[in-house]
Length: 124
Image (cartoon, rainbow, N blue to C red; front, top):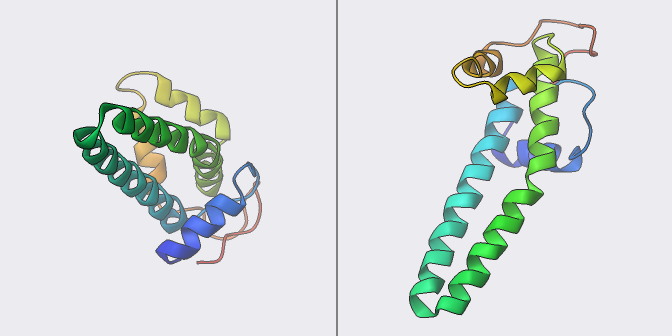
């Protein structure tokens, strides 16, 4: 799955917690969020050097944009966990310091080949 396809898929399924997501879909979407956030912070920093008010507005827009990514990020994470045959509730492990690194393992391992209890294997 390409970068653009991944972002489109995750944003179109912004509140879809069912089904499965490939590694590429999840990680390309995560990269898109990081790039958006960094670009927004750089732009807000430039605006704040021009005017404090413009900077505050810029950082506010970046914050709202980050809030807008929360639901699609949660949905993509749940679908990624489904791909490795884990419940979406495993996302709560991320709230526990150090132990939350288990999520990273789940996000990088290959998905279950073929069908699993969460549906058919996603198309690459």
